[in-house]
Image 1 (cartoon, rainbow, N blue to C red):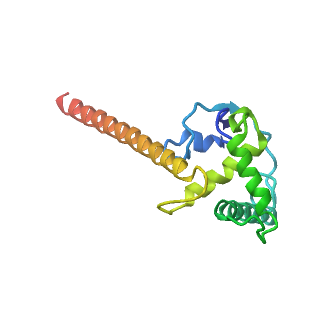
Image 2: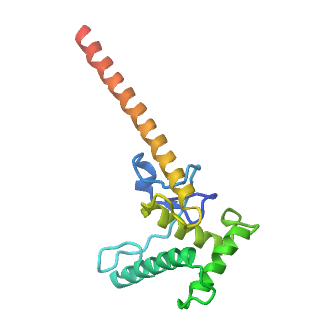
Image 3: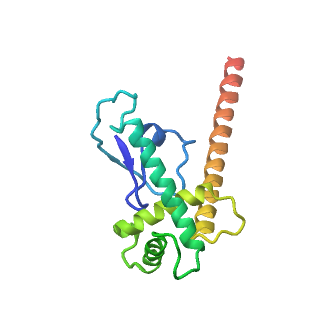
Length: 173
């Protein structure tokens, strides 16, 4: 099965990542629900999601272009920008600020915008970023990483304690 978050926009994990406590979960802290996924036969390139290598590259290229566009539109102050899609992206960003349904309520536009914002924030290194919600998303990612590190440390300490107890118990007997 795969695992889906009913709160975060477009958030799914494969079974391997779900079971791996060190897997990067981004900003999601919610309980994930197991979902069935139709398994496709492996294609010639060895992938299992049914996309050819060219389709994967094209999808990645489109994603990168959308990230660049959202970054441009967030910084652009021109009302007559030369970029053909700048005004459209600005309207999507405005929609994201004013939408009543939001991504968690199922708004597809908000889900897509939040996905782009999250991807940008995961890679952004600017100390002050003009991209909407970038700083808040990055802070949430930092908090989650800190929580994960604390959980990993506690787990490691408990395993070490149990190991020491088993060794000292074996030496006594």
